[in-house]
Length: 381
Image 1 (cartoon, rainbow, N blue to C red):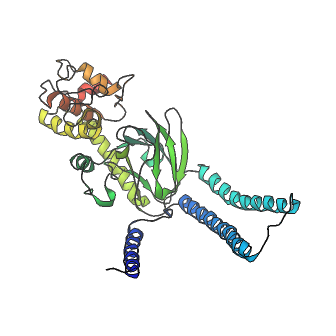
Image 2 (image 1 turned 90 degrees about the horizontal axis):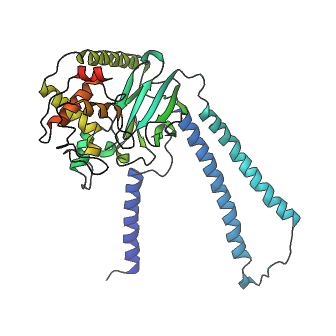
Image 3 (image 1 turned 90 degrees about the vertical axis):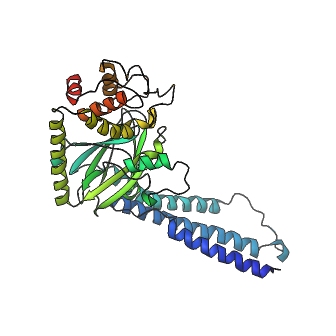
């Protein structure tokens, strides 16, 4: 028979083991981050935390002392008095002093967080169901536009392992994008945040802030990243079916490495523009179209093309997808459909991507129809 002492030892052992695991895997405090803002927010949090701890110790200490020292068993009788002006003044003055002592540093941090002046570069962030679009507004990267979606490997894995107990990518599962936002270190970066459809929220914990991206509005924020590295976040506003699969990935590079990346991106954009002028084979279009479809279309129309009627119609066997003239199909991909969940992709996908995905939709899942060339898309814009 196990004695009560033995049970206590077992419970203490289990608690210590679980506590050790919790400390190893989780943290209860805020992250300190890698930016000036995140450090200021963390320091402010710790100041106010310790003020609250001190208040708790004083208040509960006085309560416990009073209950013990003035308990009835000691023969103590309650004092009888009313309307003590001195006490009312004290318990009004002390909270005011405490609140002001908290408000002054908090206000300084908030004002600094809102000061986007003297930025070295500007990035426009647009939330789209369910991806992010980054437009470099100025500096040497001006004109670059990047669309970042959930990485294809993670997208495939979430379909295959929807009921699995453990993800297959460890700590970065569903937190990796196909085209991360790349920025230089030691530069003040101004962010302009908006959305194309519903409210999103751009959040990277290690930057120390998050901002809502609201259709028709522009919110501002800024950051200076001190350390090169990859910093991950996610959409923090419930924005629809695939809200959980809308990661934010920021890669900070040293200025020299960032300049190399900008040159590579501009060359890649030029290569894509040139490739739109050549004639693509059906096999080339189908291979590329499948990848584009998985990234941009499968969430609504489903990987098998069956859709989720009536909100997301099926493409397999669709009259539009197998029509002899692809004009209507091209138009809805380019311009979307008013009053529906179908978004316009003219500013998200290039001519090659749109031609490839339309061709794929017209020839997958048993569909058989003509192919579409990038030149056809270019002519429709």
